[in-house]
Image 1: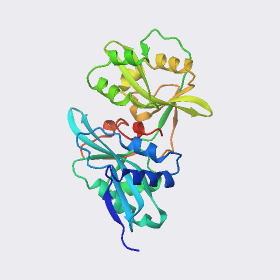
Image 2: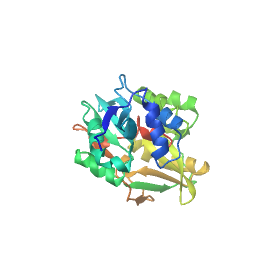
Image 3: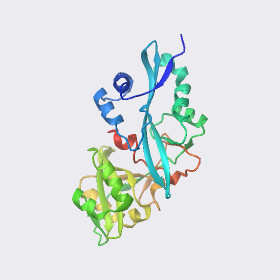
Image 4: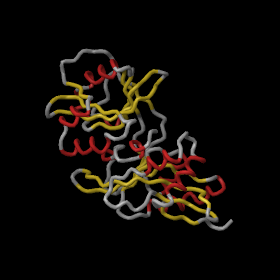
Length: 282
């Protein structure tokens, strides 16, 4: 077997990669869906859509990538989020070289939020670090609270936010599978992004972003009641996002740990904004 060729995924070759994912990824998603999701972009100059691998002209593997220009602790930072890493069994030995092309790009911080155990091991070879994978499961109870308000109408949410919080809302409001809620009061709001899911066959809220852990905890009773009356029996949020684990929460572990690489990054700097988590209906 000749050594396969690895090349950047361009707008012209993105349909080929999407068709490859439709055929070989263990999820029910069409090539059109893959293209729509991978087109999401949050940087001024996108270098590629990831990298693909060819053998005699045929796509035999690839890694998708999302790029974002962000501000972290007041400083500009560029991110590359790895997604949809898929290689045919016949070419699995070249997976490491495929990953090397991604992480060799200078000036980026890298994340992977859906690694298998094998992928996580490969990334740690490149000095990626693991995030705390524990999830707090909080029962939603119909408790009355005088503290705070819950905003769900887009117009109310937009009026309540400003600065970076408003930018985040505008950048993520377009994805129909994301749900947004703001809880708190004037000058003390927390923006929450979640997806509806199921836990033990009951509807739940899977929180993927909170703007402020302390504010979230402060108005949790109000938020929990809101979720309950909207049919969600529990709230699931990663422990690392919380200022304090609520007393009634149950901690679940055993998930594949998310991975990140960045010399100046701490785990507290990593969230799921501007990534596959929001751009794809996972």
